[in-house]
Each structure stands twice: as C-alpha cells, then as structure tokens.
Amino acid sequence: MAGTVVQKCLSPLSLITRRLSTPEFITQCCYHKKVVDHYENPRNVGSLDKNSKKVGTGLVGAPACGDVMKLQIEVDDQGKIVEARFKTFGCGSAIASSSLATEWVKGKTLDEALEIKNTDIAKELSLPPVKLHCSMLAEDAIKAALADYRLKQHDDQQEAVRASN
Picture (tube, rainbow, N blue to C red):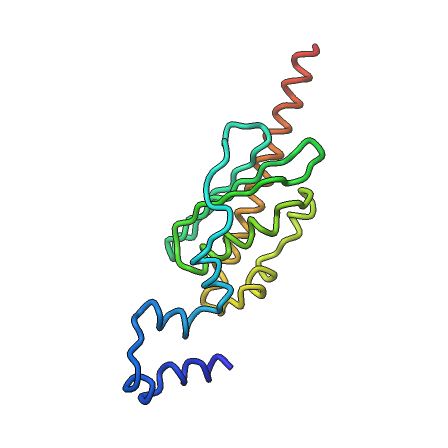
C-alpha cells in the first residue's frame, strides 16, 4: 500500500496535472494521517509545575537526530495519572508520539503507564522503520517521568521518617 501511495504521488502524470507544495507532498506521501493529526492538533502541549511533589518529569533526547522530549505527569493521591503534558523539539513523528503518549497515560495507574511500549505507539501511528526512534523516545520519556515521580515520593517518605525521629 505504501508503495502505491508513493507511486501515486511521484508519478509524472500527477506532477504535470497538479503541483503539490512541500508540506502537502509530505502530508500525502510520507506520514500516516494519525501522525499528521497529532502534529497539526497536538494534545496536552505545555508544562506542569516541576517542583510539585505530585508531578514527575521525564526529559529524554536522541543525539543522532536531535529530537528532545519532555513529558510530565501529575498523579493524584490514589496513584492515578490525572494530567499529562509534553514539549517536544523534533520531527512530526516525535511530536505525534509525545502527543499520543500523553493521551494514553491519562487515567492509568503508574504500573499501567509503565506497560506502554514503543511498539504500541509505533503501531498506532503507523510509523515507518526510520521513525521508530520517535516512539522509543516517547516510551523512555514515560519511564523517566514515572521514575522522577517515584523518586520524589521516596524522598518525601525519608523526610517523614527523619521528622518523626
């Protein structure tokens, strides 16, 4: 199917009958519609208070391609993720992976969020092999945010023990 789409977009007849602008060409030929949707309409962009004990922050990057992803989660007293935000510097697939990851972690427990795998993100967005690193970054960002949140909780418990002694 991908070959048919590329053939259709690159056929000489289509170039003669209609010129596609670069963004339009990329949208129609290179990215799946779900990637384009999350890129053009990203969900949960922004930041949460990184100093809050209820917020975990994950900051990850891929030096090979220059993508940098910050994903934050806010967890309620019952251990459920109630809010998620991201900021990503990178390609459309990286932005889409971040956006999807924030949608998926909301409403999950910490353990459930830890089960989100890059393969699930890549499959949902129909990422090509050359863009799989974007879904890997999203999984790493989720894990880093969860680890940061758990570290803050552990630090709180140690402070409580010291205060009670």
